Picture (cartoon, rainbow, N blue to C red):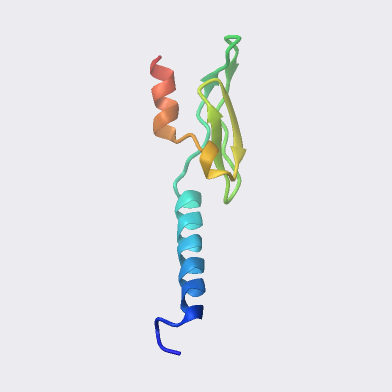
Length: 81
């Protein structure tokens, strides 16, 4: 088959998936310090390889779910308020 054959989408999809995972891992999205809803201070921490900071302004943890990601920019925004 030629370049547009039925099996050609899978290698491309795999390449895109690896690129997205690498960019998330290389993004340096560690969890910055934060204050929870009770007013308790929590120090910042680093997430392991292929995981990133997740949660909200008042609760942070490491995960691999991009839908729960909280970027360092969003975390700094939490500190302003």
